[in-house]
Image (cartoon, rainbow, N blue to C red; front, side, top):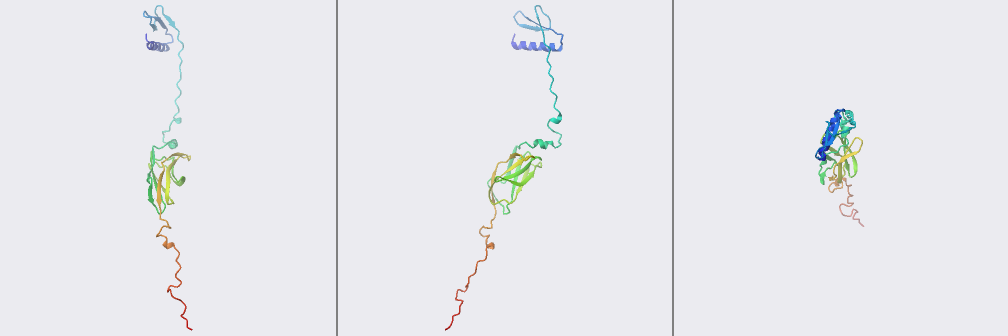
Length: 214
């Protein structure tokens, strides 16, 4: 008899024995030498002494308060404060874009997927320094940060998302922008700021003295 069949047969009989504690299991060899198990006696059969069946109690179900919160009581923001965004990128300006802004203002538009969480804060790092302008999470997928007093020239910038503890959650790839501002030193803009030049002390070009007479 195949080993797998013997295992299944013995397992079935053991299961039957666990149902009735008074049942007896008998075993013997048939004419072909196969081992037979049965709960009915047979000539030359031996009785198998079964040990008490062990039982294991399942662990208690966790309380609902220990699981994930789905009641919408505000804890969702705390749980989502550590999550990352599938998409976080600067939509405007484009990388290596030249921007004319005589006032030195720069608008940075950032797209997020999912929308910026209410437990998060978005700021901009420009040239390695954190800007003071910030946008708090409002459930919108597009955020705009208006940067003021940006100097003329090339700048690198990236948008960074922080959690409520001030930890960095995620940041965009850095881009480079070129701010063009009119300078007071630019030719054609300095005439009004120049001091008046001194006049010719002798506009007529002649001798201011008399001809004299002897």
